[in-house]
Amino acid sequence: HKDSVEMVAFCPNDRWMMSASTDGNVHVYDSMLHRVRVTLKHPLAVTAAKIRVSMPDPNPDPNLNLNHPGSHPQGTHARVICVTGCADGYIRVWDALQGILLHKLHG
Image 1 (cartoon, rainbow, N blue to C red):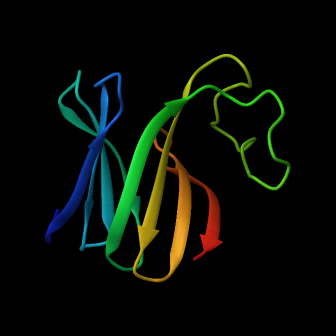
Image 2: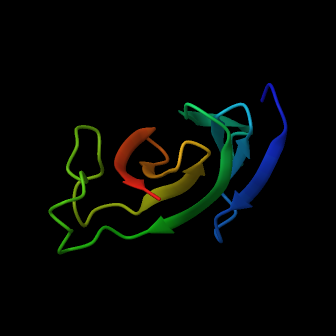
């Protein structure tokens, strides 16, 4: 990060970790490989973030963009989701391993 780290979190499986910064970036780390897996870019400071592993929903909300290219096939793999809060007033839901924005909600 190029600025203050405001939050860190990890998944219960201890493999995936993340750090959120006022530089507008969230780094998702693979603790087994000891490297940044992906960087989630935001226009302003990231003030809140949470990461978790979740199984794919067999009945997904049609309003969420969960069937984007590069997503895990439904029902085959767990998905790592990161939810972030940004100083721009938006909450973003990310596929944390692909770095793909799934949904953007105005706070």
